[in-house]
Picture (cartoon, rainbow, N blue to C red):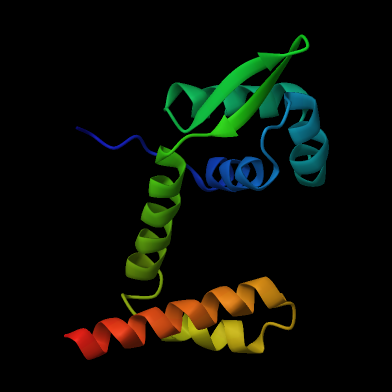
Length: 128
């Protein structure tokens, strides 16, 4: 099966919806689109394109369509990260880790996730 492609803007939109689901077109246009200079109609078109690709689902509640991510959403995010590491970082995560160490806005939750990941990687290495 051929993988459905997704652009950078669509990926950012998908991630925004994943963090704010379920969300209406109006909410996404205000929270995501306005900061990027995107009209509501453009946001709607992008959301419907993502729904057609199987990355978003929609349901109607009180006369308003609300959008949420599907299980394939995580696959597309993982694929985009993998592609970034391979193409941009030539397969090395060291430049990303160096960037993270200099980034001032690492939240407590992000730091906990990174620590858990390092712990899991260390456990896997010991098992091998």
